[in-house]
Length: 250
Ligand SMILES: Nc1ncnc2c1ncn2[C@@H]1O[C@H](COP(=O)(O)OP(=O)(O)O)[C@@H](O)[C@H]1O
Ligand SMILES: [Mg+2]
Image (cartoon, rainbow, N blue to C red):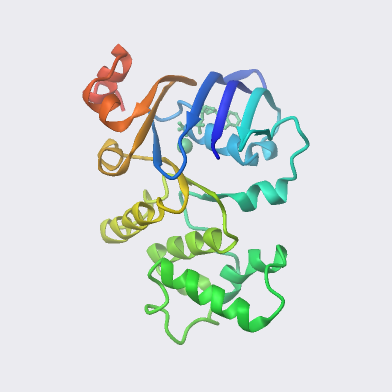
């Protein structure tokens, strides 16, 4: 079980955005993707669940293997791929429906339960897992938009988790949150890594230092260095990584 990119190149119109990326992301760990703004972190994440397909003028070369299957060229089923690989984006984007409806949505699409009772139980479980169940007591059927931003982000995470993914991609998932919500969501990811393979684009180096098991450092569309967090942070091999860690560019 892993996500692996082999000679991956992504072009958007005439721009070469990802350049010959070769990485393998270990399972049941947190991998943090770091690097300066515009280096291709989001593009890489969006390639992993093929959200990149919706970008106009995109061309993909090379392979992305998810559990050994090439998802770019094998005619992988997109709905199933996105169930298996959930994405939490930078800004929470709850669906315009109730709290319950948000978490139930994917379960319904994937026909996970025959009985409503099972669905209700499952929704409650997932809300509990993200620490929301007690907070929203009695408000399960009120609009999700009424939650605070931090609560909305946890709701979006619950929505992703409810369809029982194997991988969770998070793109600067705490950057829009206040410090307390941010810490809550960050802790949540750490608690989830026993069950899921988590790939996070982190917006601060400090966050990566706190939670990463593995680190991928990108610069101008290339993976410069990747490996266990201890190694990359304490003994970076590449000069560019050393400079980045020293704060030479952000
Ligand atoms: N839809 C798009 N059209 C054209 N260029 C894009 C598009 N999306 C991203 N890019 C370019 O790709 C590069 C990498 O972007 P991105 O993956 O968002 O970087 P990061 O997440 O590291 O900040 C940037 O130069 C950006 O301008
Ligand atoms: Mg980005």
